[in-house]
Image (cartoon, rainbow, N blue to C red; front, side):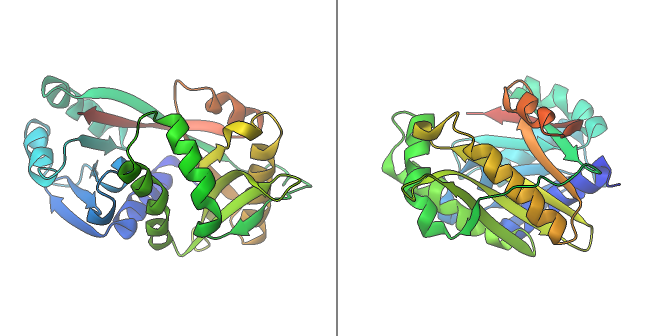
Length: 254
């Protein structure tokens, strides 16, 4: 069964592979993409805790590698490393939040699926509408980056698929990413979103079940995902067989 350090390794590797460029510093690296400069998920620092990390020097390293951006985003997967860095980052004005890593393993695969693979053009309109709902007042440039950044995810893993559930009229109702690592026997489901006009109609469950079926068929019986610790999706995923393994600590400053 895959454990938390393996999930962390997958997430760190995905950040590096997805990035347009990376900048290393003692104890971590910045994953950067100038094409999508408004996307926090494509321009952030990952602290790995590798040899050379000095928690007191971390805020200065982050300022250096993200100096061209108006925001600072830092992810620290390892709990011990996060505890060591929390003080210096908090003193430097960062707020702290947590993302829960959840795993599903050893449970029966859903009997039904129903979603299908789609390409980025099929998702552009519903994603743009969703982002305008999530971030009222977002500029067209920001929405463009948040939508188009999905293309960069194709670099993040050996097999990246976009899945969508459609309504009776053929409109995209819910969607998610699926990343497969056959060598490790694991998969990640990421960014499961339902259009506001299709909430509470079962579309998210259709996408999730399809992702689980594909992962199992592709030799990836262990599936994980991340969810904001204080938000309701964590409980929704738990009802569908995902168990919490641990947390990734996130630090932000704007």
